[in-house]
Length: 161
Image (spheres, rainbow, N blue to C red):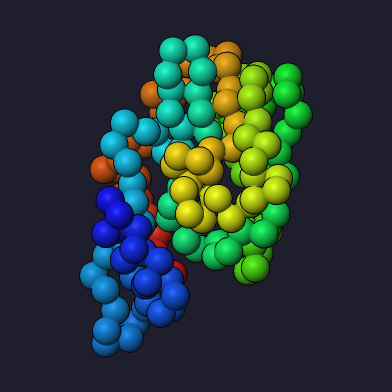
């Protein structure tokens, strides 16, 4: 995994992407996609453990955003709805909404991201998680993509750009 993260960072720094038409284009992205997580088409991931679902943005998303400089997250106790925005990520390239992959109540917010938003770039699946939600409709998780489906989705999306 460390090698893939290094390759992704190097490719990003060299401005090499899967969608490039240049003769040196790589055949596939180096974004890390983890097994055991569920993925939304808007590039958020969710890890459901017990009665809590942890949510963040994917490695693919942070790679396309570039250096994250600001994160806006909800307050504790706020209700989120599947597919609706719960916050925003601002990078050197753009500001993007973050959508919840599951409906429920926010039970924890990653306050570290307020002071160090770059954690999302360096550790999108571990330290860069954004919120923890108590799902109100756990069956919504069944509609999300697994790792293989998400990988294919990203490859198709990058090829079309």
